[in-house]
Image (cartoon, rainbow, N blue to C red):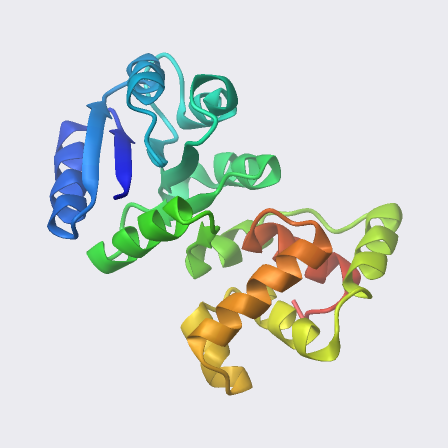
Length: 216
């Protein structure tokens, strides 16, 4: 059973998220309205997922996520964000946060994100992927060399999947493009991330762009 701690300083957001997740059979272990409350709740409840708003009184979501290793090593952070948080999202990507979901997403996407992160996978909204890639500065020469070397580890089919990931496509969209099942795409994405030593899809997309593996 998946257990979640929800942390957001807006009660309406907390209750809305609680309603959506509980309707999907996901247990809400605790709720918090600031970063300090969130850490205390996470340490006590030891949930699979901490759903964290980026901006909260005291400690923001990034600071809470950075302390999960001490507070509850088995808990993974799913960042709840909005377009106004672009720079913070980029910082969280670089730190390897497990997932990102927009506050404007559909209930079904929120549920899918929580379940993916709880299962040890990374979840990144395609919209977030495209947004972050638009923020990253052009690659340096050393970074490009490193990216080219890492992408060279991939087989042709894996590169095809990587290019689609770099465009911010969802697994369903990739499946239609490369004529695979979604389950097969999921396997390929996991394999690509492992070969590239990337924690999440956005890191892989940034690497592909640096290597020149995407037309972006």
